[in-house]
Image (cartoon, rainbow, N blue to C red):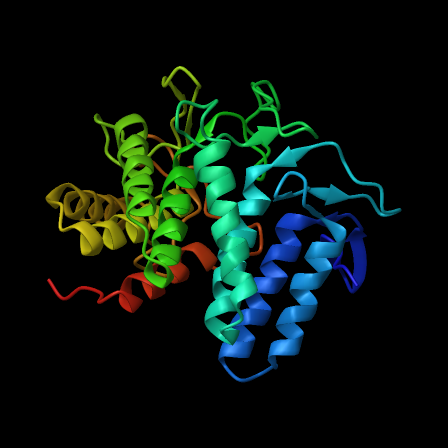
Amino acid sequence: GLHAWTVADGAVEDARALAYGQAFVLLATSQACLAGLVDAEAVARAFDRMEDAFYEPAWRAYADERSESGVLSPYRGQNANMHQCEACLAAFEATGEPRYLERAASLIERFAFELAVPGEGLIWEHYDAGWRPDWDYNRGQRDDIFKPWGYQTGHQTEWAKLILQAHAHRPQPRWLERAAQLQHAAYRLGWDATHGGLIYGFAPDGSPWDMDKYFWVQAESLASAWRLWQATGEPEFRRQYLDTWSWSWRHLIDHEHGAWFRIVAADGAKLEDTKSPAGKADYHTLGACWDILSTGGLKD
């Protein structure tokens, strides 16, 4: 009942089952349910498949990948868990079923609080099977877009956005405070003071690691900045929102053909013409716009 990672020409190309991909199946199914295209049972089946294949109750987290033969990889990562948190919030909004909100809340507590302690409050990417941080996984590599080394600027703000979405359903002052902490850290360590825009990632010592600018980092940070401004009224979050939009408008948005370029250099120079080649069809950018509009968008 799991989906292969990729298909090509009508045939399975990569037969691994990745929790990251299955989380997007739950997200899509939840949105389809919200639109009246499937029922709540379809959402439950997608959630239960993740539960059976990847969830590890002792760790309150999801494992990452199964081979074609079903063998579980020892690698553990926050990315799949972040997107499962997002999917669970969508499942709750689509069905009203409490267990989905409970799981989203549990993942927030696990990743934004407990596991963030070894990283001095920031959210690290890579772990071993015992959920100990693996500080060297993919160190020195810049070509793995799903498992990059270093702290990901955009994942700090993406978690902030998800925490705020959960906070809207179950208000908790400590969640709001945590979201603000992650957002402040992302802009303190990730904003390029010379050229503008948020860099891709930084090292554990806070130094810049990858200075390129990715579309999804700016998009997720726009949504989290907007939500924080709406929730707190702090001018700093409004400034982050406006500065990031302005930079993206100048350097990332294709004003001739539409959509956003995937990546540009630190100074905004074009590196390639691709747009979201991972196949997620403008998910980050459209999602950010919808999220902003859903919370009172652009009334000022």
